[in-house]
Length: 212
Ligand code: PRP
Image: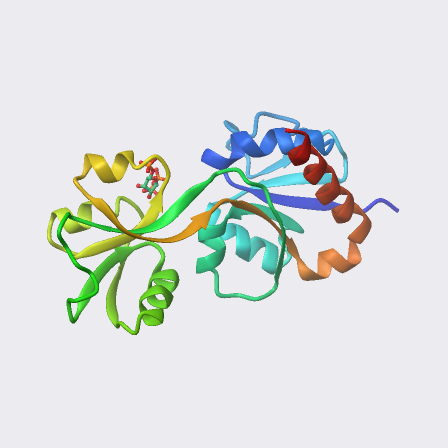
């Protein structure tokens, strides 16, 4: 019996780079995944479907078995606190950095009660805790760069790709917290139950990454 396979993806930056990797593994969406409003998209393989979910929801879909496999950024995975995932493959796409940023001249490590605006509260708390510093985190869902400009926060923790957004808002990188790229993640039970199918998918994507 052939195994079904559900793959959780996100519309946006990573998807255009992900589709050629899936194509190399023999998986082609039945319709244009970048524009469809459908959340579940069939593929050329009758037993394989794509789920289009928010990037921050990919770990939950995979951990709880809504999807067998998912592709999302390391930033999202660092923020995810669950533990029911395997992360067997760095796809090397969607590269960016998690950074601490603020206006020039701010020293984030001397102020006693620093306010940090971020959509990465877990990463932020861990980063400052590792420096022995307690901070107040303001959770935002986007456009973090505005918070220091209006005096709501001292600094931000966010991803930086080209640096254009920081520059446009007069912010500088104060520290680099980590490198980010897209990762393939796998549900632990699926890895056992659908081992042959998932192993073949990983092997084919790996092969395509080595060839390009
Ligand atoms: C991300 C991030 C920065 C920007 C960085 O936002 O939050 O604002 O991209 O990219 P750059 O260094 O190339 O300018 P995104 O556009 O994903 O939107 P969001 O704020 O809704 O997360």
